Image (cartoon, rainbow, N blue to C red):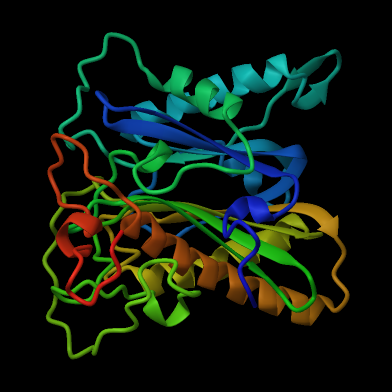
Length: 337
């Protein structure tokens, strides 16, 4: 496997991602959309998820494709971002046809960033407007780190953020991941700068520091409360998958969360992975291709999580340090960010 040309989920041809965020709010929204409706599925491993329209993603449901997926800050308030995305898609003429009406299908998930120091005293929810802006900004290039749904994200001790990565398989199939990291667990080993995801790093995409020696880890204590933590992600491919096959890709991708965040999938996290497939590339050997797609989804997601934290930047009022502030100094043998 090798990364795609952008090392972003948009290396899957036809996909576009848009971010919208608000510095005063310290929150934002990220939207994934495509040139045409996508097959989509979801799998939840965390104990505290927050979602919109995920029931319709079961394999036996009437509507088999979606027009967009969104990740949002704002806890339950952030679910309103889907309304803004729907409004924008409706203007574009997108949606499931019901007679003369089109209904855009927009599942999404949220993370908790209400206690990150931002101004949350709104009279009207800002998230529909952020969702609409994120959709309208959708392109093949987009910002990582302190951006979109990851703008106000935190982890157990370092700032979180928005991350993405991609891989091209020997078959030519492309897989990518997009993630907002607001986890209870730690992306780094012990008190050092090395990432848990280091064995899967491509080049120096998150510093090139290599793995840290891992010794027995003491049982961690939660640094957040119930409902305050989550890692929400999307994995995507250009392979022609059924909804059931897409769900298996989402299941496999959860391994990437476990490789990159310790601990993960806790009762206090809302860990969730959406899967999307554009169907542009037929599989030649279904068993082998599905096996490799699942592995690539997990590997890309682990890398994307590390990139989210590595690329987070400091902003005034931060409650937690970002990785670059704590470790990205020159003259220490570490890569300067």
